Length: 295
Image 1 (cartoon, one colour):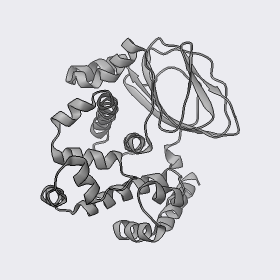
Image 2 (tube, one colour):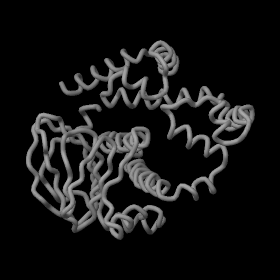
Image 3 (cartoon, helix red, strand yellow):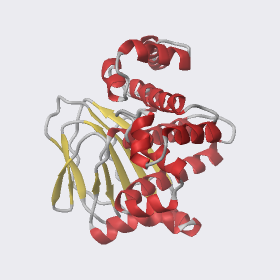
């Protein structure tokens, strides 16, 4: 993760903005945080650390990719079990007034907040693939908030709406899998399947078996919709996840093995063809960028 996106941790428990705030914390010196409540919603995205989160009277053990949502008025605090392990997470605060604004646009923005309030369910586990799609949106929003590009305010608004709606969609579709299959096309269903099984065998034969259609029809479907072969589409998807994983400080070996590349040589060739640089050089270049910015 680029150091320019990192925020020094503060025990402040109130918002400076009237709408929303987003922070990325990477702490190695850990301070105790007392039990507290907010008058806004807190979305907590866990990356690393040996911690548990106490919400009300319940203690929740967390692992990479977990999302916790603390609604207004609910007491919570982190409990550090091992101060020698770095503690990394994203924290997103959003005011009740801004939530009301989103609800005026569409009730779909409020599904998850209503779920948390009515069912007292605060913790949502995610697999690595699903969480990477969420993390990429968090990074994009942070970059926009800390940058000064044309259209900054307008794009921040779009990024916030996209983040909130995407998280709502992920959780909604987890609890309503049947309705998703009923309302999406074969092409969309195959794309969704690829997205959630990107680390597995995704041969035409397997896809044909999963969706009960011929492999030639699937090949035609992707050519017609994207102008790409399905093999090219899957490879591009895998490379995009690998690129994000390397940027998130994961090892190259662990990365290519996690996303369906059978060996390093095939991963190396595909990565260099797609991005014009080797995986190692890309990692080293990102590290140099972070170091130079720190200076």
